[in-house]
Length: 116
Image (cartoon, rainbow, N blue to C red):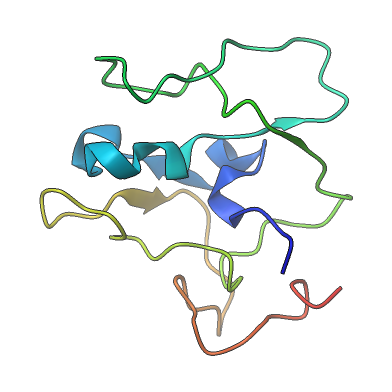
């Protein structure tokens, strides 16, 4: 599709909580957040080889824009809640109500926002 995964959006921390300690270490970079292309401040780039236990205060090295579109829990580009788990527990927690009909980890097709 040419899109980044939804849970890497710059505003993702308003919508999902990442449980870093539950993610397979070799897949942890899949959850690094991007920053907005117009961000004035740039946090340090996350290093997946570090011994950090949280990557909340760094970013992937990628810049992106959301074009003012809302966060899409049902996006085909959104991981399921337990993807890449190392513990059998969820790797993400939901922070806001999921719209009726949205399936987190949807693999059946694009949402209206995916298709824009």
